[in-house]
Image 1 (cartoon, rainbow, N blue to C red):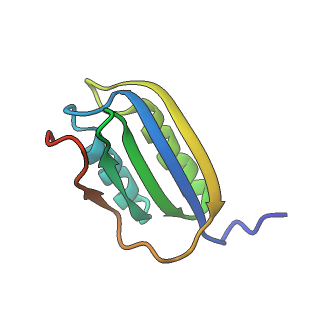
Image 2 (image 1 turned 180 degrees about the vertical axis):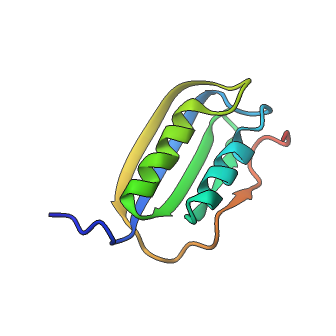
Length: 102
C-alpha cells in the first residue's frame, strides 16, 4: 500500500497548442495553490514539460489542470510518468525553454 503522505514525482509532457497562450502561467498558479515544488517549461518542439513533487492527490489535481489548460490552449495529449519524490525541487516556478513567448 502506498503512503499518501509520501512525496511523489509527476513528469508530464503536454502536446498541442500550449505555447503562447499563457499555459505555463496557468500551471504555475495551480501548482502554487497546491504548494507543490517543481517547474514548467516550454520545449523547442512546441510541447510543454512539467516536473512536480508533492502528495499524490495534489499532483492528480495538477494533472487535471495540465489536461485542460487555459482558454486558448488545445491539449492534444499528456504523456505522464510517476515516480518517487526526491525532495530536491525548489518552490514551483517557470523555467525558460525553447519558446520565447508568454
